[in-house]
Length: 129
Image (cartoon, rainbow, N blue to C red; front, top):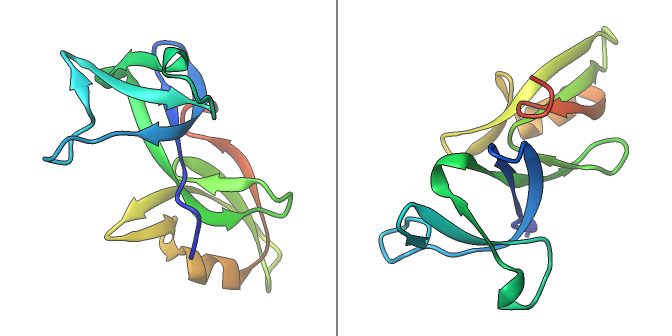
């Protein structure tokens, strides 16, 4: 079973953070107080360490369960470069989640890893626009 992890882009602060918890209400929406959602940054344990941010300023991304050649975790929104096994051409794609599957361009993750000898992260859609 793969590890379920998330990170978030905080637009207002122009900052990427790891999420150690994210709570949802019974309808599946993030727990909110007015226009804010509560999430815990990093791996802090005390409630006083929790940070409030407006829901409009946060984009949550899920970990794919895959790592690149440098052992860096690959998340939605990352740009990855794969070196084709046959042609040795470099191809860059954004990682997306579509119809229940992580996609690397037009390939699902399994196909992409099978067709490319080396894969590494070149950036993400928020910090490297």
